[in-house]
Length: 273
Length: 298
Image (cartoon, rainbow over all chains, first blue to last red; front, side, top):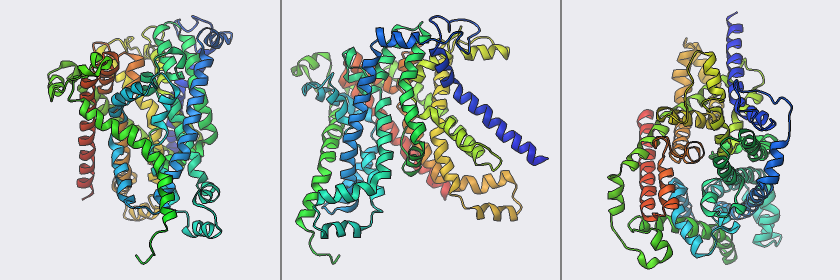
């Protein structure tokens, strides 16, 4: 009897809590299918009376949402691919290759993790200005192309690669880069998938740096565009919800498909989502 | 070590592998951090932006002005409010849900885990837009529910007393799933034998929690506490989207102040000083957490 009650309480509170957690996202989707003005009523409607795609259409037709979507997608993809390569190379070298001052260098990098990124942002902006990279994709990409955390994650994983494998490849006459490419990379695959996920989502969701660097509306990423639109269209709840759906949905889908790798990665090293 | 001298080729390869990432990090992170430090002792402003000849070194003037400014202390107060209330609240809910999910009677565990984690991956700007609407005084769902409980509508984002609690609630909602996952990992690492011997000693559920679970989670707590604190100190997007720092500056955070000073008014020297104060505060807070953890352990 006591056991039944306990089970009821635990499961019941979890269901209630899950409902509360999911509600804002579910409601966002629901309102995004409403007619203009429908959500500005009391009591607030839960479901659209006659679901419509009007909001999405006007986002694409009048608000250039397709362009922002493409900006975000191209930036996140290229940063992910580039940083994956550079971080994997460095992480592998820190784990397995000999060079002088390696340990000290690695410790310095780790210590720098306590410096918040915002500290670097003001001079970084000035650097971009003098390099003529303000308002360019390259300028947004550069600070994300290598990350201390990414190097750390790869290194921890690469430490477990047996030295014999690397030596065997060398004896077979493979050069260092061949060894890295055809022996190491396949072995690092699980951690690279995780790191790719983190980087893609982190870049997609990033707000402050593209907000600072992108001065032309046509170069905005989705979050920057959405923030700007939400200031101009305070009253257009339905359209703003559609914009929020478009911004959130891609990362949410990627997460749902690959959540095992994502959560394993968090348990391994921990990173701010 | 008895190993022969390292083959030159390998060493060269090692540098070849490290160099690109290292170069980027040094040039675009270490150098800017140092530059920010120097910048904070100058009067770099919009005139210097146009023509560097206008730049002057002013010593500690930015820091002095900062410490004498009401806006700065307001931002410090708001940020600490957010960190000290939101942080523990978020960690507590994370631990609570992790413990609930650990219970043997739970069905659909992975479903719950997915639902609780989903807000973590969402874009903060997008969910801030959604919550701004949830908080709407007239049409928002929150006030609608409060109405059923017999509570008068609250002007969540328009009332200086409620704007920060509203932002905290949203931040906790968005973030608790992350720490929950880490707590679940920590809980799974506690050996069952410890609980068994505690039971044999006659410990009830509460005593088991107090004497086995909590001490065994100490390293997890340090990690979670640090990560949460560091994240919470960098509050920016929520006030930017939801309140613009208002009402009456009740949601201006340190980073928001830095952004406004640096990129709205182009007082880059002053903003750099703000950034370094934030850095110093975070450093001290990190050291305090480590120290607390040490005294706890002994």
